[in-house]
Image (tube, rainbow, N blue to C red):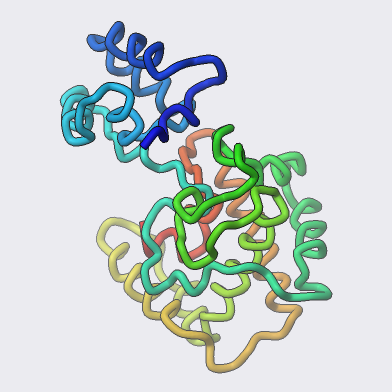
Length: 248
């Protein structure tokens, strides 16, 4: 399988990684944090140590550590979008809805414009090692292999946000906007409403002006949420408006 070797820091061998793990077996927090730093998943830990993924997950869970967090290394999205996969696609719009135009408007509104470029960089160094983002690295299969560059991710990001907006008709959107503040009692009701709204395109297309305004604001909100101090997000669509909430 030999997947773990790509995730290890340059110059570190599988045997050296194994030695590190066994040397810290009584300090699982150190193992967990180092794995998270380099994007080493439960499957990779299994390859390194020779223990099954189930054994590793059980071992870390006994210390209150959730290996699900280690496995969230997908570039686009870390939950299965299922039937909503159709929303995730490249931006083929031109003019005011082109990626270049939207980029300029989003950068102008960000509190820290430098966050924009960093948002479209791979989180882990091995992800663009072969200059291709594979379906497994992306988190979706229908896009196939994608060139490993920021332009690809930008296009998918804006294409998806536009598709999300175009799937919400005016009545559905108003219902979502007017929904009471979320709490544990109404969260499932809200998710059900959004999931139903996203299931098909809006009956009446929106104007380009509306799409630009709505897409730009959602992009700004998502990028700033991604870089929030308490955020552990990895995929650039994990906090996408509506989509991330529904499939998480």
